[in-house]
Length: 387
Image 1: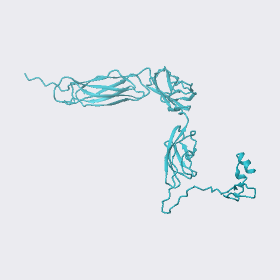
Image 2: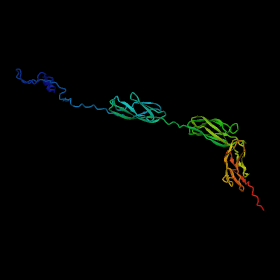
Image 3: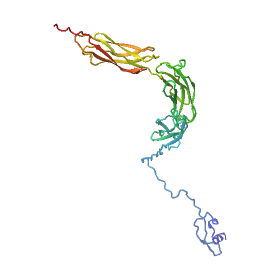
Image 4: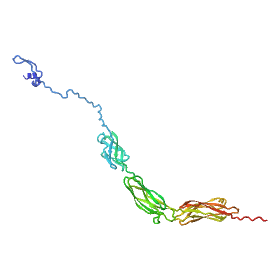
């Protein structure tokens, strides 16, 4: 009945058959005259590895070598502040076998690089540098069989420092009694005030002598300005003094450097003396004394150059002895004499002459540049013939 039910219900007859009979034959059974077939369930084990092929291995065959991992050092980019070192893990983004090391670095143009024990590197920019700096590093695998090189770019942000500023003062020349105005110059405009102190100082012109009025103070260059003027009064007097000068010194600058720290004020006397030379007549064989005259005594030396020059009287003819040089009028003096020798001979001659020329005067002008020396013949005429 259970078998029939399983067959009619499409069931699994293996669930209702006995597992002890395998292929039992049919035959008459009992005395009922029925024929029957004894069905039995055969249980067989399943081999999980059935149908698989197991290859054999021969010890003569060469083993397959293990493949090396790829090696690739990748460029790095880093940023740091001016003057600040930065530690860079250059291997962090590289493709390397674990345990690879950084073996070498190149030195950048604007800083220094060192390799640290943990295979990082430390970059230190040079003081004051800003911009981009680069260097390279080389890394190698633990076995030394593979290596690669990559670039590192470090950016240091910043802006250039403002240009250094310089202060200078000019020199001026004024006529006695006029105002001396000096210009103090800043080499470039500044965003902040720049200051410098000034002070007048005696030289040949003195405050005690009444030559100028002293002054001292502080000059301020307002932002954006590059020139400031300072003035000094000079005083006129009745003295013949020649050219004098006093100084204006700069000191204690703030916001700039003093490049030219001294101005010179030259005071020209409003009356300049002049030089003249006289003419003389001498007899042949006498000494010619030529006098140079200064129009007024002055408080400093006056010089002028002189030189003799042939005219009808000549050096080659033995008429006079030449002379040249520099004449100095000491302070307070107005006359100087220069001498020229003349020579006698037995030749009856007409009156002859030579010149004394002046040039290159200092602290005076030349009003009369040439003196004339006349030489009168000293030979007596021969007596008249007898009657």
